[in-house]
Image (cartoon, rainbow, N blue to C red):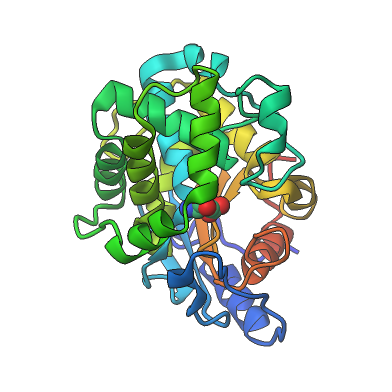
Length: 312
Ligand code: GLU
């Protein structure tokens, strides 16, 4: 059933309101991530959802203006920022196939000579951040500047407590980085890279901020100020990798249920793109066993079902 009005400037608001009511009535919401202690205290019943349209109109329901820990959602933006600078050479250092393994797994790396499967597992994101660091001297700073510019929110910032907590519990990411360095696939000193990566993951932003920051992918590569970040073809590439690899090893199920390019993070956020139409961000910190927000996936599933919008 399609219940939106295409002529309204807030065409999807009735859909969002209906989804929020449905989610409110749903009992099970999963569990917040506990391997990063600073995230464990989140209330799994928190829920917010925002839509940003191509012209920068943004609106939402629930806690759509509440900042949360973006975590792996930022991997999309660092990928875009690096791809914009180095183009196809990036793909010699990171693949673009689903991994079929947990996001922080080491096992495939040895078989595949230190080339991670895709930019959205931790190993791949570390490679992307390393390459952005080499090109900019401050990968996390580039990311933050980009998010502030696209969202129009200059108060966005790193969360020092979350970054410190990840550094303290960062043995696995350190192992991934050192292992890839042994294959020559990391340029920077590992402690420098890890500091950049953990700060990148720690950025706090709301559904409104992230929906706006994702809109360049719905605009086929065009930023909020009208300048081009990615070629149309590169924007397609990023959207395609989100669809196939963006939701941990549940990307097949996400494509089946939602049918949009999406990227989730263990903070409970998920961004999604309707190419040529809008960007969406949903947040609810209770996760399923694969690491995706339970209410977030359910809400996006309902969004594409109610609107009939998907890439299929
Ligand atoms: N900072 C987290 C980590 O590296 C990100 C995980 C995620 O959101 O997938 O473990």
